[in-house]
Length: 277
Length: 277
Image (cartoon, rainbow over all chains, first blue to last red; front, side):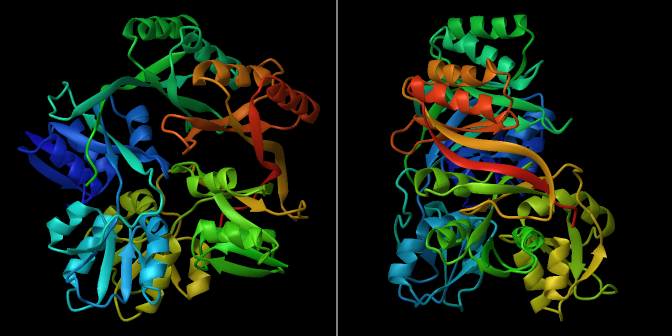
């Protein structure tokens, strides 16, 4: 099978794709829209896309594309703990300049200030880009803050491990596909993600929508409004719903329809966790 | 007065600071946390921080910091339409490489593919960084996708105007300060932003919280759950509330307290719009 992921190689998306599909062909794409489109057009069998980071929040490029354009949905979710490493071409070199994505820089700032107070910081568009750039300039005293998998991908040394400040940093990835994949990963819970479009003025209708779940004791694990883009001030709502009581959830969804609230299923999936990398 | 903003110069934050405080001293900071801290420690009198982009969503670095650490809040909101320009050191040069932030690249991709199909694309951490980098390399055939204000800041030529694909792209900025500033901008509406912490299991309590507003006919313009970071699966909720009926909103807030829902006021502000730049 062919699996699409958000490149370049050595990214967290790449690691998730490797863990989920260790023996398949993995194909890197430049941005999230390209990854989703690759699945949509049949170029790949599954696509791996990030949907939410615990610090940065929802990945709107993914969720908005699925809501507005695509008739596809998530068949599995993989939760990846985010740990950042300091990488260089050799362990014994001085470090004059450190490259990384702004969020990874913010996470590693305390460590860097303590151990490399003289190093200059340069921001890049992603951690994997930073690692690739450092690997391409072995003559310079450069380092990158990037995932562990970027070290093996680009032949870099880990000169400091797990330098991030915040312990709880993880990213949710969705597998987009037609059928539920067989994954040799540890299953955690079942969830369903709906995008609700409300027929009415916001507070009353949202309140009714939540009532259909609240009355049945069904937990929502996330709620977020997103602009509909048709008119300013109109919204749709992304809700993540605990789907352990599948019967009750399906009754609640029927009730939503009955009271005129339309929804699109963005995902119906088991959540898997993978080990820190 | 001294005003802090998210640098480098020529960024959208810089433009907002200039529009709001045309005669004051503007000070650039490296990241959002530094901008907020500059106000917290009294280094500046007001800070300008982004809170939400209509495409990318909430800026969690801002909202989380205000919720978790700071006892300060927004006293005004400024909405900035986002338009992207193609900038170079001279108008008649060929363009071999185009630099910008991933979102601006996505927005300008269609234009670039049509007019510069041979150009290579390089991602940077922000649009203003891209403009500064292009200005620093006049000997190269480089261009940047960046705001109009970056052109004057770095002495670049606008070689193509408003190249973004999506018409509706705007960013909300908050002014953090002690007192309401006198702005010679066009006022639009009054809003209040609360961070709610629910005492109970999520669906029932959120449903009750929304009821206090729904029953009074008060519009919510945004709702978003955010992880509390104390325990996995616990959340706080950011709600933006239309504050035109101030009495009714204050009754609703008293009722929230009465039923055991605690809140922190993140902002109580008039919304201003500024012209496209």
